[in-house]
Image (cartoon, rainbow, N blue to C red; front, side, top):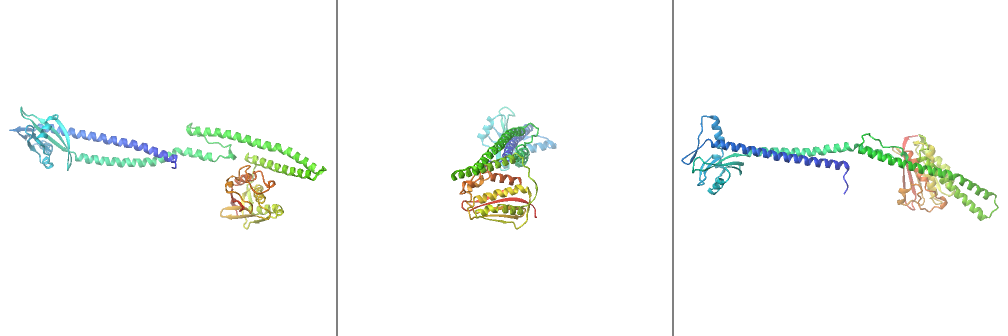
Length: 471
């Protein structure tokens, strides 16, 4: 399973936490509101029942309501309090009086149930579910005179309160859902804002390579965790820079120190070869030694060039270079080498095209590619150089009919000292530094190198530049 991005993880965590908090607040608000409304309804009903008891009279065992019918307030209260109202004789369980509203609901208790009400506390409350909604009843046992006991029930419908609670709950859950959605959007924005310094830090880190180890990550001066990460990375980068600098210095110094003794040994071998009256076999050994000295000299020169290049000691010019003319010139220079092995060397540059760069180093780049192509092409083969344009890019292609390159070797071609096992003679193989230098030249010209080839089918190398202007 693919791991979530940090921004997505932070957004989900923030939204989950906020959702839990909002849900807890919503549930708490709902519970508190229900309790408050329930307690208020019960208190109002009990007060209404106690007030009604003051108007209740019993004559010959029958209940009557005694109040001033001309008093509007009393009449309104009595009508409201007796909307759901009934009276039972607690001894016999007989129903003595019942309001039309209670009768319509069909609430009629048996003597056993009336006796149960009598055993309950003096005033008790319970809810009854009816077709019109919940009805809350308060039951009281009153004793107007000795030997008389009556059960009085006064009710109040809770339908309006339940509808209000339902509306509140609906609004609460809608707001909760809206809050969660808003938290997702806000959380993603906040996560992105919080991770912006980290993204900038990553981008700055990606720009640091072997050529600019002297660069450092910016410190914002806040002293937070990101600043500590930047400081730690800068310290590690400083250690790497020192190590790489020491290795470059060592390579350059070693190569420089080797040049003189190798030159001396080669000179002595040449003198021995010219002046000594030696046998043919001895002369062949001396000639072979001179060839090896030449190979070591080329290797040392390449190491020095790469060390200077990576140390930033080589300055490249930046001027228009006619790529087609340069290719034709280089092919003419190397034509005798190809002819000596009967290799057909051709150059095609039908369209004049210019790129920005250093003509000398671009010439060296093409010489490296042609040297490799001729080196690994058997006698009688073909090597071609083509310069073309496609849109805003210029393509310099070198193709040969040589031994080709294994597919698994292509990703490693531009590494130092990497050599492909090939059919070329040992004296024709290099030290594995030519293509590393070619890659450096291409990088400095903001160009890319593509290699295609397979064993026995030849190799094609394409260098892609950005066109400066048409010549």
